[in-house]
Image (cartoon, rainbow, N blue to C red; front, top):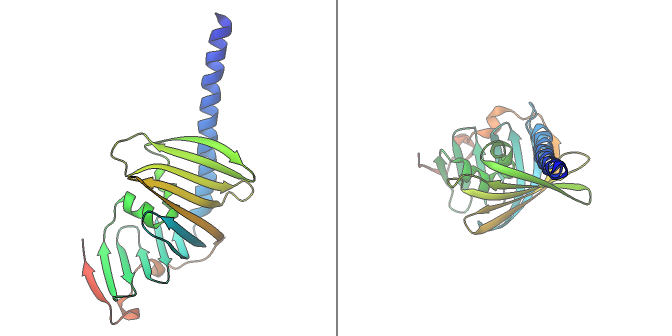
Length: 198
């Protein structure tokens, strides 16, 4: 009987340690992204909402993503999406789920609430699997691949509805970024039609 109790206790401690390890890996990755100055990186997106590649600037919850067809600014509350083909700028106040499908780094705001986590390793990377514990979460699952040496995320794969979207991330580096980079400036796009969807 004592042996069975010991085995159950050991299994519980092992499971708790695994969850804590997954959280600590994500904590370190999040710390690399949420530096005071800001970070920049290249990304390639493939999946349910289309394919695109470009660059992204991040500072806290703010981001500025640029692709050949669109540019997105988010200042922490308001998002401006400029579509190059039709010279339109849509202005909105996005939800967390909408932000996740645009900003691959938004996992740093998601993993602390409403998700269970497990940790695996593959080669030189950690792979954290997040699974939603709440029915109202739009993002049901995420796989976040993190380099073991730098703790930089290299891939974020997320499930929204029945579609998977994969972001591959490279060349992440710290960069001093002005707050003005995260807001649309109408003077830079004089021909753009602004459509307020708020």
